[in-house]
Length: 375
Ligand code: GLY
Image (cartoon, rainbow, N blue to C red; front, top):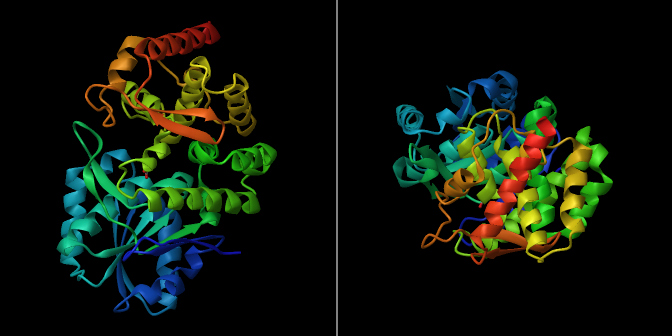
């Protein structure tokens, strides 16, 4: 069954279509958005092998001609050289102002192609066809686009909403366990930040989620997208509520920087670990019940997700260095760190009023528990 989440942003409303085998219907889904039957597709080498032929077949079945550019897979692609290549290729293909560009891939391709679409001829429309769980539940929705700078991640970009998102849950079966579970970190985040009933549903369906049952996946993606759409509607450009989507991210960004943005820690793994640290901190500050972090850890363990810094291989710096890395975060205002903490599961809030000592102690305890478990 195909489900639709409508994102009614004034003047740039769009649908997120979620369901099995959507790739095979992509031509019919995209056709109503086209001024002429021709699209440019940008993807990466890994996704091209798995899914580009199916997309091309679906487009051609509806009489839509397509050209495609395949970029290298991986985070390093989210950079000026590949961005320039993408924009110049789109110009070479004579993509016009009224044309549509398709981003077929995970978060890297979605962010880069969305940014290319935002600047090409001062803005062309684009369709997101997210192929990772993380991209389906988070990065393909909400219009954040961009690339990384040598100074940090996602520092160059624009808000540019897609014209359509096609989240084919069947393609999630082709993900490795590690990539799939990393995406689940973002799904768990939605329950934690604003919907206790969704968290409880995940507790009840942990096994179905782990085994990628299509019914469970459809519900998890739809509810996550509904929550994201609701937040984006309230605060498209992150002046307030949208920051709630960063639950776990202050810790996550420090851990990602400490592990060199490498395969040692995938973003979604860092989010799951960051969420446990945010709940530990909330419990230690007396903001939420002591049981809440344990309940979160139990869910992460049930599905096999990363849950603590002990799950990260190799050396990590000390607590003070991690704290310094947290201060590089783009959410630092006047030198004060902003945290998303929680009063309960499903009740996150933003605060800059967190004693630095408490954060340092939390990190020291987490690192000490890690060395004990590796002894
Ligand atoms: N990924 C966080 C946001 O879209 O705001």
